[in-house]
Length: 306
Image (cartoon, rainbow, N blue to C red; front, side):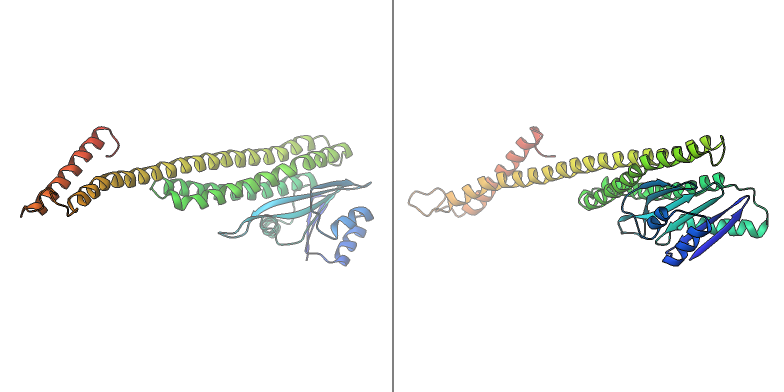
């Protein structure tokens, strides 16, 4: 699918799941070299920066969260930038680019004239992409906040898996943004050296880099919070387990003397105490009860219980 958006002095071509003929037609239209054309024909597993005489290529991978309960994955976008054109190639639907196309189409219906230039549109493209990553991060942060409230409602066991999953999501976001840094810096530096857009592009490139840096710092912060909550949850779970073990230990310690008393008075041997006493049963029960009370009072004063 080929989307065309003409603006002041140039054009944006967006290729979604293009076939070979569509890529070759665009390459001929904008005089893109065979080397760059080859990179567009299939996905590239890692970030890439390349250039020819009239254009520069950037391959980036952006993290995306498809649905509730699914893991974070990355989607590839190939950018080819010339002085008066932008070509983006993607191999699946990418939501922020889809929204941007709808926005530009609506704007075009209102006004036939657009003051957007190539460098401005490039900044808008990256702003939408990093805003989408920020929204993804905020969504994960909201999930983390809900897990935090659950954790302090004595549901530590239920939150172990949730915190681990959210922490892994932040880890994938952080890795994807970190992989972009070097390639994005090189690409923007290449455009600046080519002087496609004039001296004002320096400020735009700084803003694009700042967008990535801010989102990356936000992800790092939330990942640190998730790690701290994981440790807190582990401490709460450990404390709760210790309380359970302590309670079971006290019960065991209390029962042992009762068993000893029962066994002692259950020995039917000559001279056994209370053997002939008609109130023996109630005397033994009273002795057991007194033993339990004395032990509980002792444990309480030692602060082992209650």
